[in-house]
Amino acid sequence: MSRVLVDSGIKWIGFLPNTWSITTVNKLFYRRKEVNDSKDPTILSLARDGVKIRDISTNEGQLAESYDNYHKVYKNDLLINPMDLISGANCSLSEVEGVISSAYINLAKKENIYPKYYDYFFKYQYWINAMFIHGKGVSFDNRWTINWETMSSYKLPLPEFYEQKRIADYLDKKCLKIDEIIKDNNKEIELLEEYKKTLITETITTGLNKNVKFKESGVSWMGKIPEHYQIIALKRLGTARNGLSYNPGDIKDDGILVLRSSNIQNNKLCLNDTVYVNKKINNNLLLKENDLLVCSRNGSKSLIGKNVLINKNLVGQTFGAFMCVFRSLYNEYIRYVLNSHIFSYYLANFLTSTINQLTTTNLYSIKIPFTYNMQEQKQIVNYLDKQCSRLDEVIEYRKQIIEKLEEYKKSLIYECVTGKREV
Figure (cartoon, helix red, strand yellow):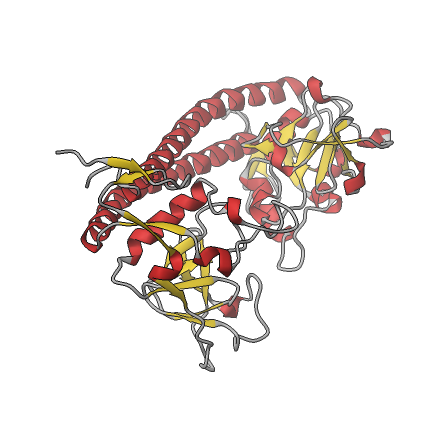
């Protein structure tokens, strides 16, 4: 016989089985605030994919001057990030012991409950922005937080212990299978992206006619190039300029569109996230058709160098200070150079632990295999357009599979933790 569902009266919980009850965080958990007393503690961090042990010897990320005020974490403690309520599932059950910043809320069970069930429940709360509603702060985008007073009275469903465990065990098995499929698809995407970059590199370096005579390029890692090719620095092929600096007061509801890093997605223009400014702009900073827009600075080094060609619809718009534009007659060809291993090789040498940007000087210094034969360039561009388009279709298909699986996993967790699906 199917279970009877009743309205819990709580918007972010919805309908529950009539055998379940409603409780609050402070009845099931207490906030663990045991201060670190170890001279050499295991430092933990809360990541999207779980609680991780930090290797502080690498000096990556923000390091504390002292870990004396950090709080102890034990296995099966549920860690909550109260400072980031909008960007994802920032909660996880710890499988390791150590210490973590006191800024996190560390929930230790005090009743006979199965914490993994509540780990899944809180992830669901983050996904639907339920906890966001209870937050406070200066702005939605900057430190929108939930305090302990609010958190302690947060409403939770309360199934019997055996049902909590059964739901968590069921979700563990189902989510593991889903995650394995997602992982396999991500591997396929990585292989396809690598193959595409290798294809571009080989085509740019050797051309399409394999029967021509070849010569040494003079660059050890580049190998041989067609005899009629030259190794030319980008400085000889065009001009580069950095983007527009503007203040928050310059941002208006309309005016001139400012293209930023977020507007380049998979080497295509994406105008979902737009900013407009209303100020006088130098003509050199107004975009022209076939300008090559390049991300030159970003918090993530992996995003530096992503690029797109400007189409005629964006002529007269501008670009932000973290971007640069390369203007050349040969940009359709040069765009593929920037998507090859040739550019990756240079970029790896430009970016260091202290320098996290692609300067115009760096860009100018890049030497590429180049033919002035415009017909040959066009043939290469057409060939790569066709080949890369096919690869991009397969990559996009894989990404859609991942997106659907992520949606299914969230839906599955929602149905299980609220008792709508019997397991």
